[in-house]
Image 1 (cartoon, one colour):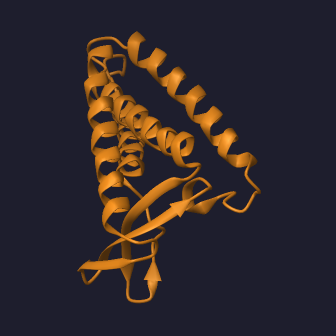
Image 2 (image 1 turned 180 degrees about the horizontal axis):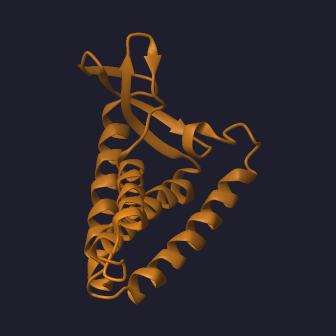
Length: 157
C-alpha cells in the first residue's frame, strides 16, 4: 500500500503552494470575503489545533515538530504493512501523512503554521485552518469510518 504515498505528496504540494500564494498575496490578518460564510485570511499559528499551546513560549515548536515526525513515521510504517484490501485505511493514512508533513514543513521553515481558510456564521468564527489540516481531518474521518464499517468477513451472517 506504500504506492498511496503519491497522495501524501500531492497533499504536501497543494498545501505548500497555497501557503506560498497566500503569504505572497495577503498581509497578516487581511481578509477577503469569498462567500457570506467563508473568507480567506492570512494568520499564523504557533500552537496546534485551535491554537492549543500557542502562547507556550516557543518550546512547543520543537515539541510539535518531534510529535509530527514520530506520528508520520508510525503511519508510514502502518501504511507499508497494509494488505491490498485495506484501501480505505490506506487513503486515510496517506492523507494524514501528507497533512502532517505539510504542517511540519511550516514549523521547521517559519516556526509557525500558515492558516488561511476561515468559515464563519455571523459573528461566530471557526478557527482558521489550511489544506494540510483539511487532509488530516478527512484522513481521520476515513480511518474512523473504516474502524466502524471495516472488513466484516469474520462477522456472523
